[in-house]
Length: 547
Image (tube, rainbow, N blue to C red; front, side):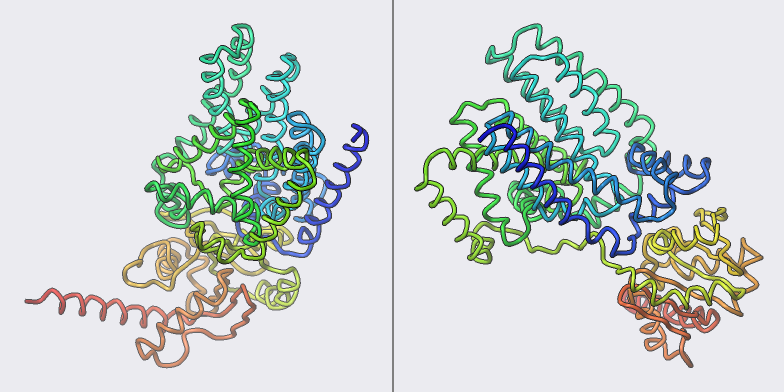
């Protein structure tokens, strides 16, 4: 196959990848995680700087989106960097595979990235993972070119891309760390001369400086031993940390699940292991060592509760290092002859058709990955009249963090920007004739006794009464709640009324969509019902402890 034909096919695959990623970009409303980026992109500069500097994520993508926001006010435009990054990654992976093992390897790598469900999903949201993937793939390509050709310009390109990838997402650390492991191995095997060793050491100075800056100014104040780290390790990411040897295998299978999708995950797992074996047999020491070292470092960081490993977007940075060995294996099979190709196709088809028993035999964890996008724009359009009506009348609206970020474009339309009050700090927005108070928790609870506290609904009401007189005057007149957690909060308040026998409903004027609940809260009856629940809870505890 000629070089020109290879690039034409790669462009066709990239166009396919772009088409697969394009649809959801404009069809879905933003989620709460995206809303944080939307807020930082459009907020006044001082407010944006405070948000970015005090966020758990690195700053580069926030500032990139602020540049995009200068061109368009539509939140869909903020998804374009991820869309373009995901599509360009297809071409870069073609270049990586082609550099390593020829045209077939390059086309296979491109096709794997173009069709990856995880890569497609992360190319549709205004989050940094697709951008990080592009930078890592480019750094990998330039590094392999340097190791094969020893051209300084390739190493200079790697030295530029690697720290940028770190500034996009912390997980990018695995590449320079794996390069360090590879360099030690190549030096011990006397496959790396002293001049190249010095050049590689110098090339990693920018990476070291970037890592030191991020640790001192971002990780140390915003993540290290902070509540968000504890909540992630013990909560929503707990299953993605390695606690024992079996978790390593489960994490690897979860990663395959995320990148390939449930029907193809078993085939991808087998193909990856086979690809590494092929790399070793063909003496492609650089790629085998690099990819194995990346996975080893990822597992180690997970075992140390530093960074998750498994079926999560936080492990997407491993995608280039998974796709490349699989592509090498495909190229080797393609070169072996028609019989071997037919056998490989048949084996893959068998693993796909028998996906359920294959997953069971390999020990795959249950596939329970939530979608990146779930609120259709039509759902917001259907609620728009209710939201506009609420903003038009004086009163108080209480939301949690996920909800206020989800509402970010609507608040921007009203030129509403927050101020803060209280301890813990709570944001207050003017919204039309209404005051919006934000509970400083991702999803509010109706205050179960075990979780009663200032960050939950009753605690927010108490803080408003004590510290925010201009909003407190509405507590007995017009208080509404908006929750982007579906009917969960509304159902828990209704359950509170039923449990305590509250006279009359605690909520009224309910507007409910599949993912959003809007309702008025009768504050006095709610507080009385909650007091009854708390009293009963403590009475039951005293009864249990009475000898």
